[in-house]
Length: 157
Image (cartoon, rainbow, N blue to C red; front, side, top):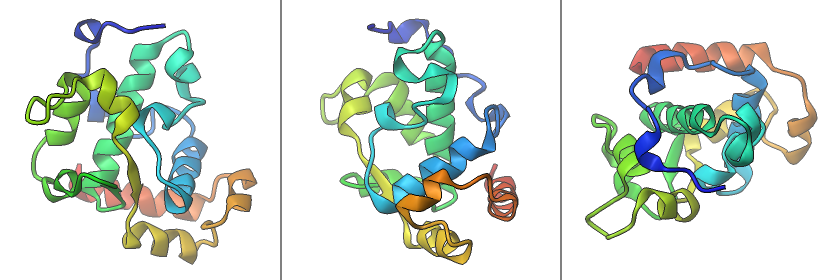
């Protein structure tokens, strides 16, 4: 199913950091520490993912997730370090919504071609809670980890 980007509304992306189960954040951050991933591979169980019944809600959640975690220094663009260096701007949101005219890629392509991975900061957080392992994907929500995330998110929001 193709989505018409101009019909999507991203105005309130950051209004609610946890608009879906906290376990989704925990699991996606675990994956980030073990392998790189694209926006289309992000939060695939939230709102049904890219093929679900509400693609707009899913895309809002993905943009929000990537934006806050890059701003907090937990994620970085694997091949686009400039994404991480621009924490004071909405550059990431802009390219995920409108594409990147500087390199001639529209948003739909970037959702498949832009890769993210964890930073040392995230790796250390996950190690602290013994979550940096593929087996941790089967764990229940670690409330101490989520509490630390919320404090971190609140400091940059």
